[in-house]
Length: 243
Image 1: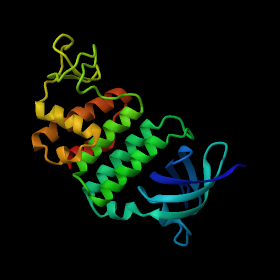
Image 2: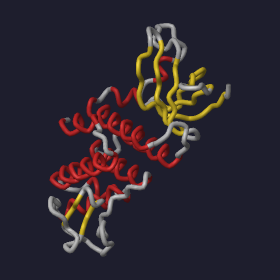
Image 3: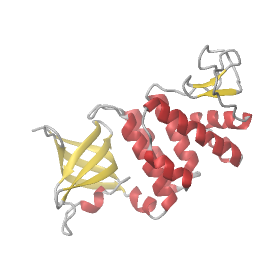
C-alpha cells in the first residue's frame, strides 16, 4: 500500500467502534482525505490529542481501498486549543470547516488554494484578528469564488452591466441591474454592497469599520447565496447566527 506524508488541518472527527476514530482532513497536497486513527480514544493513545478539530498537523498515512489509515502525527499548530476555549470561535471554525468539506469535491483531489484559504481563516479565528462573523463571511465568499461560484458585486450577474446596482438575487448570482432584476430580489443598503466587496477582496480596514446593520445584512445574503449554490444546508450557520 502507498505510504505518504502531508500537512493537514483536521476538519472533523467521528467515533468508530470502541477505540477508533474517522478523521476528516484537508491536506495541502492530497486534498480532502478520510482516514482511520486506530486506538486514539484510549487513554494511552500516542497521538489522540493531536487529532482534535482545527489542529494543524504533519501526518503520515497509508492509502487504503476505502479509508486511509493514520500511522504518525506531529502537531504543527494546536489551533483547536485556543478555539475550543471560546464558544463563538468554535462555532465560527465549525462553520468554516463544514463549508470547506462541502466545497472540496472529490476525495484525494488536490486543491492548494482551498487549503491555504482554510488555513488562513482558522489562524485568524484562533488569533481573533477580526470579528468571527466577518472571518466566516470573507472565507465563504473567497471559497465560493475558488470553486467557480464567484459572487457578482459590481457588475450585473446576468448581463454584466457595470454597477453599482441596487438589487441582489441569489439564484442569479449576486447584484443585478434594473433591467435584469427578477421578482423576489432583495435590495441591500449601499453600505452592505460595499462591505460585500471588501469581504471578497480582503480589505479588512473597511470590513472592521463597517456598521453593524451592514454586517448583519451581508451575513444573511452570503448565507443564502452559499446554501443556494451548493444545494445543501450548512448546519453550523444556524448556530453561528444564533450566537
